[in-house]
Amino acid sequence: MKLFAWIVRIVVFVLLFVLALRNTAEVSLQLFFNAVWHAPLILILFAAFALGAVAALAAVAPGLMRQRLELAKLRRTAADARVSTAAPSPASASTAPMPREGKSPYNVVGPKV
Image 1: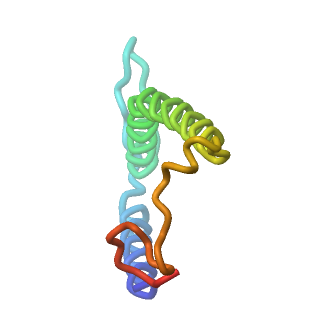
Image 2: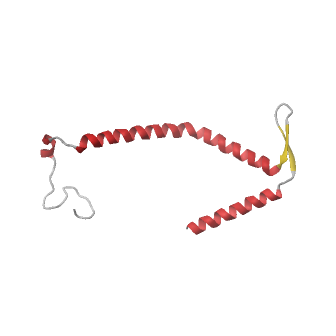
Image 3: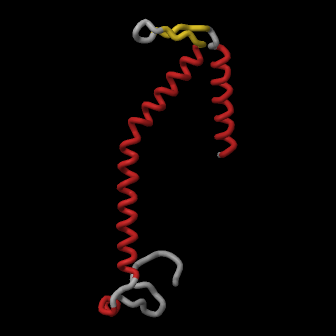
């Protein structure tokens, strides 16, 4: 599968490289306020692609940051819960079900402990 992924990457790179070589003609891009940018077509296409990628990242960043903050908060909560349940009190230890004859009290499929 890794070989297939590398083959696809190489083919895409070669196709984009040939596209760049075939589009070296000078073009002019009319900007605002009568500004004109003269550059090879492939450079203008690359700039448009890069600006689109930056705009997409800027649009997604607030949601990702919100999710990371929520995940950190949930991890802290889970760690606090783990710490509070790690040392059970003597009263709760007597009410916990005890395994009989080395078997788990739960219906769990897996190796026997």
